[in-house]
Length: 245
Image 1 (cartoon, rainbow, N blue to C red):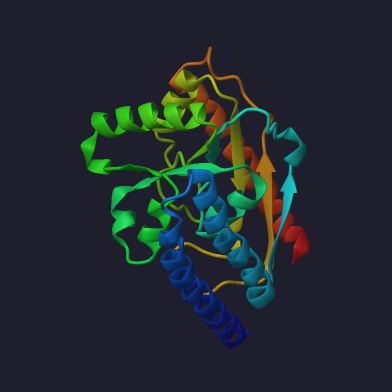
Image 2: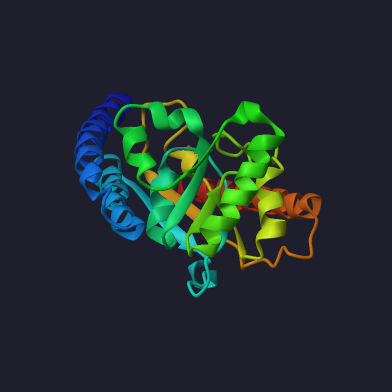
């Protein structure tokens, strides 16, 4: 069985990498056009990856709370981070987005070139308060421009079922932006584990909260909400996994 998972993962990776090269190179020709045009072109790669991992590795997903999303106003997405899978899936579920990410990711050949087209908020983690101010300033600007902003409050990928430290940046942006805040939990790491090449068939359950009005909340209160939502839905995801076995 492990050999089958390995071979299917190899097949997925061949398709993922070859199309990444194609999209990152062709995407450079969209630079003279609007951001909406660039985004709409590049998001096809995310759609392909979600479809291809379903075909090759048997990874499907269910969305719980999709009707909570109000597309009339750009919102802030504070999401659980377990794998690369959710970075693709969020682009299928929510409207046009800007991601908060490590600046060094933009230096990766092909991947970084493609990401640079999507107006990410690229921060230097070693910059401390300066990076925090950049996140809040640029995040507010993206939201005002009508782009949804994605922040992973734990800051790094976490193993499925394990909660990481909730950092302050996303909560500070939430308290100042005046935008609806959506908390997103999932169990993608159970099928696409952190630092693992092997992907296993299964169903990812994604839980989306009702939009929160964080304007009257402190950053600490927002972080408490995030921690509570993540913890609650990590338990639900674990129970679903057990039921599916």
